[in-house]
Length: 134
Image (cartoon, rainbow, N blue to C red; front, side):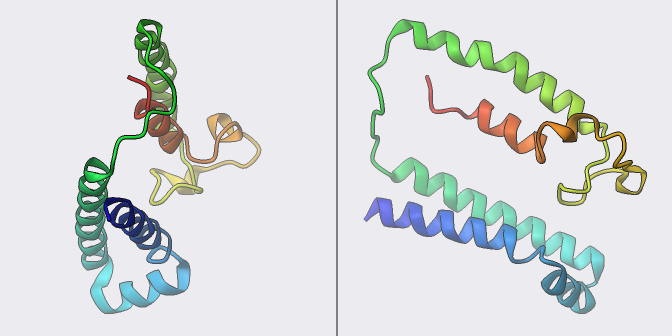
């Protein structure tokens, strides 16, 4: 049953983050809630669903994908440098592909910068940071 809860939480997390920001849905919600109301509701929903997903992931059974060895302890240490660099380089850049990125009006398609290599740098950094290795 724990796997079903995890799958349901994951589907709901994905749906809440992809459906509510689609232009027709978002404009309909903003028209009824206002921009501030939409942002507050979206943030609250995101936090609630993220908490549910974390709880469901914690309750799901552990499945070892590979045997642990002491050398695997070095993998997170090696990944932290790229994670920190990706986060640092992506926070100051306009990114219209990301949700509510900063300074998106200043985005220049002729000078993509870091966005040329990855569409959502913060999501890549998060994926590397929470890699399943010990």
